[in-house]
Image 1: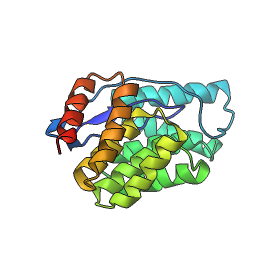
Image 2: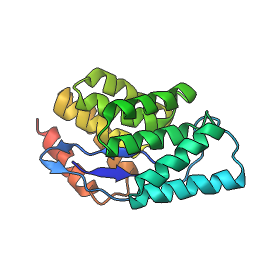
Image 3: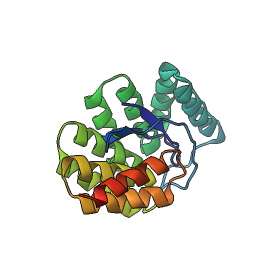
Length: 198
């Protein structure tokens, strides 16, 4: 399995890659800056710089620096959901799923519509076989942000491989193809054709 890092608002969700129709997604790093779904605290310019430095450290693999900066930011801004999500991602990298879930849950207690936390928690639910919980989180993510292509992709995988709802899988793969600029769009198009034959 590979990881995909994407910046969202002031957070960086990583989407755990799953295999569908015999293919696997490739990891890429593409920062995307969008307005936050929920109200985030207003940070000082110095703290904004600390957040940017933490993101850069995270992308370069310096988890210790990133963790220290995000933790310090949370001390100043306890409702900074993005810092909690990023600490969850670091926990995932360190293979500490319980701590990651705790961080994603904390982010969602601050902002129940945080699509990054919803997607990550959904993927962790999928990994432990809690498919309906995964479905609930991923569906909420695409309700909050209909063009969040990675949630559509993972819903497609969930419906195809685990829930055997091929019509729903096709629907979400088609959303992914329409919204994604990733290099694997042609692969997902082939998956759709294979599913249409079932």
